Image 1 (cartoon, helix red, strand yellow):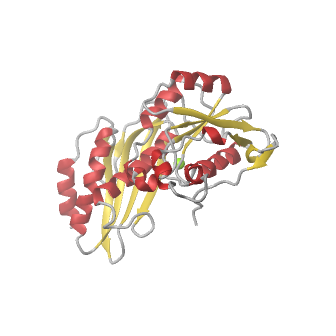
Image 2 (cartoon, rainbow, N blue to C red; image 1 turned 30 degrees about the vertical axis):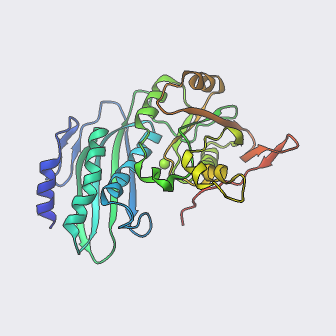
Length: 306
Ligand SMILES: [Mg+2]
């Protein structure tokens, strides 16, 4: 099935200005702008672990496999250039499955001007597995890393959090445009995307940066989906807990010098809101104000990969 599928796919792949050589040779050639770093990331989605076939359309599964990679490029403030896509397909209905996932991949690739530069397809007796590797390039501002947060920086987030299982986990927009705009216009110290849970990912930024963070829990933007799924919950803070720990929000988490963060929030330069949810502090770990007015430990909520 592979050759016939690749031939039909080639017909559907538009030309791309940075794709010197695409599907057909042993490897692809992507032209990068002189002086910029290549940013490379990969993500794998496996049936049974990351999705249940039949519960979610193949197009949404394919779209997500690409979107999570674009979100990681956004986290580095990189401009996407190209992707290579590997599919491991159950033997039964392999062509339909491959065609189905590409129904979601192709429009998202077009939306973000990403070249589909190549890949691999194989069949086996196991479940559906999609692996995508994305290549981006830094802008003149350089990469945005997660290890640059400093005590005194504000914690700034895009959008809202929690309840992504209601749909956002598949339908989110990778924050590429937002990351590039913010990185270009403001002095950002650190950035990452929130995939495993807001407070868990914040704790990772703190660990990478060698500092801690104080959360302002009243400022956490809770999504309507998190609110809706928490109606009737015995825990009055259920929606907040979802916002802090559900994960797969794919929003940006940024460390920004305090005065610049105030300016960003006043400017609101994005279509999605920017919110300050606390500040980075010297003391390692995550903290929240206690009732007595000092620091109480905040246990990170989120998804720990096994
Ligand atoms: Mg990430």
